[in-house]
View 1 (cartoon, helix red, strand yellow):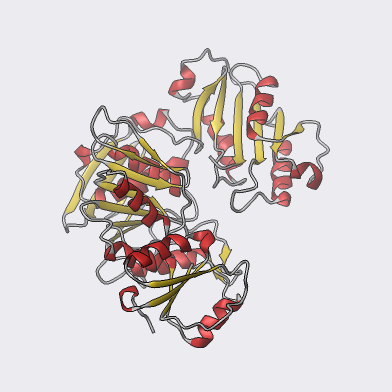
View 2: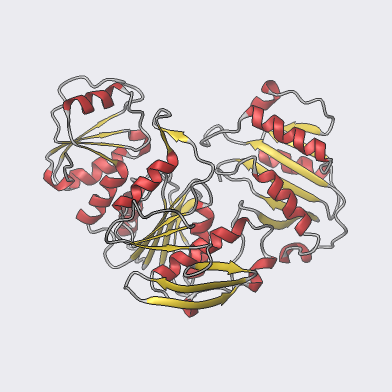
Amino acid sequence: MVLKIEDASRILVLDPIHGAEVIAGALKELGKEVDIFNPYREPSFRGNLNYDLVIAPVHLNPHFEIMKQVLNTHIPLINHHEAVKELVSLNNLFSGLHVIEITGTVKKTTTCELIYQLLRGRKNIIMHTSSGTRYKPKSADGGEVKLPKLSGTPANVLKVMLMARDMDLNPEIAIFEISLGLTGSGDVGVITSLEDDYMIAGATKAASAAKMASIKNCEGIIVHPGLPLSSVVHDNSNSNSYGDRGENLWIEGVRAVFNKLRTIDGKVTSGSLNFAPFKWRIASDYYRSCLEAALCAVLSLGIAPEELNTEEITAVTGRMQVEALKGRILIDNSNSGTKLKFVSELVDAASHLRQYPSERARGEKQKQMKQMILIIGEDSPYVCEGINVDELKEVVEMANGRSVFKQIIIVGDRFRAEAEFASASVSFASDLDTALNNAIDVSGEGDVIISNVKTWR
C-alpha cells in the first residue's frame, strides 16, 4: 500500500546520516508527529512500530532488523527521493523557478557546472553539487554567494531551498546534483551515465537500478544518453536524448547540433551552436558527453540557444582541467569522484596537448614536453568508495610498463603499508599538496604533471 505524506499523522524517518533530520524537520513544519531512527547504531527498533508511514533511503540494507520489522508489519514505506518530491510540493519550494536534477554514476558534477556556465549572466542561478553550493545573480555586478557545503543526498534539496529562502535569494534556475536517482520534483531530470555500476543496499541491488526506478517519479523531461526508457518513463514525461544521430542532439567536431528537441512547454527546438573556443580549454573527450548533457538539459527548459553563454565555457576545477603550474602543465583530475581508470584517458590528453596547449599554458614559456609525472591515490579518509589497493597496483604496473612516467607519486599513508612496489620511480606523499610540490621538484619546464587523486574539494 502506498500512502502519501499528507495523509499520514505519525511518521518514522530512517538514517540521520543521510538526511533523515532534514526530512523530519520539513515534516514537523506540516504538523506531523515524527521520529528519527539510526539503523547503523541500533539495528532493531525498541518499542511499538505504531506509525502510518516509514521513510528510508534507497541504499539502506533490507537485511537490517528495522527494515525487516517494517516489512513484517506492512507499514507503508517510501524512500527519501519520493519523500523529497512530495515535501517540495507541499511546501511550495520551487514556486517561480525552473529546476534541473542531475544523477548518474559519473560526470554529475561536471554536467552541473557546465549548465551553470551556459546560464551564467543570463539567469539568477542556485546550484548544489558535491563540490559546493552557490548562488549567482544575473546582474553584471552581482558576485557569487556561497552557501554551506552539503552532500548530494536527496534531502539536501530541501535544505538548499530553505537556506535560499532565509537568505532572500531569488533564483530563476535551480540545479541539483543528487545521489542514486532523481526526486522527480524538477522540470528536467538528467541521467549522465549508468556505466561503472556498483551495488548498494547491502549488495542486494545495483545503483543503476535505483536511478532507473527513480524515473517513475518524474513528470517532466528526462535527458539521457540514449538509454532504453520506454518501460519506466512516466506517461506525462517526455524524453530527450543526447549523443545520438537522428532526431536527437549530438556534437560533431566542435559544433553542437540539435534537431527536433522537445521542451517542457511542448515546443520543438532545432538549430546548432558553435563550440570552437571550447576545444582549447579542455584536455580530452571527457567533456564531450558532459557538454552534450548540459546543452540538452538547458534547451529542454525552453531556453533559446541565442540566450546561452557559449563564449565563456571552461573546464571545471579538478575535472580534467588543464592549467599552468610553475612552468609545467598540470592536468588536474583530482576530485571526490575520480577513478583510477581515468589514467589512460589522462595520458591521451597529455599527448593531445602537444598540438593544442591550453590558453593558460600557452601564456607560459613552453618547451617540448619531455617528461610526465603521475600522481594517484587517496587524500582523504572521508571520500566515498576509496581507492582499491589491488587496482592501484595494476595501474602502477601498467604505467611502469608503458615507460611514459618519470615518476609515480602515490598519495595516502595507508598505501605505504598495504602496497609494495619494486620500481625506483614510485614514491609516496601523505597528501595532494605535498605530492604536487614533489612533482615540481622532479620535473622541468614544459613537463606534464597528471593529478588523479581521490580527494574532497
